[in-house]
Length: 118
Image 1 (tube, rainbow, N blue to C red):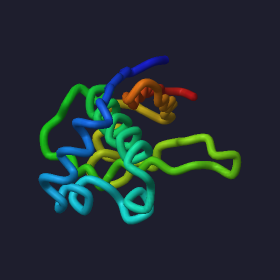
Image 2 (image 1 turned 60 degrees about the vertical axis):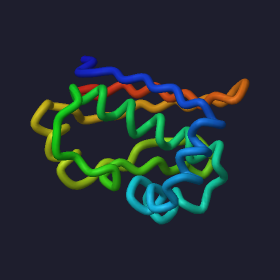
Image 3 (image 1 turned 90 degrees about the vertical axis):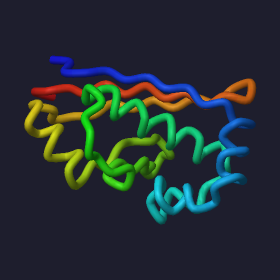
């Protein structure tokens, strides 16, 4: 059963401007493994993190570091949820996350589906 969905879209040029204006944002938002990626991929990670928050109903007090976008051996992205975000998801009955990230025309988009009983 679907518990929540979230979608977010990021304009790459605007995102790069934010990173240029506030370099500390990279360390605050992204996990060490995510930080090694190019700007386009970072924007996809950002969109995925925002989509997770939306799927959870936008609760206060969650850490960006609790949501990591990682890739399997074939390069497919998936979510590694930890900390307070994991606790919140478990309380909601979420047992599985689905993630899709796309890039096109200067945009990065992510969709997240939070599911129970998967």
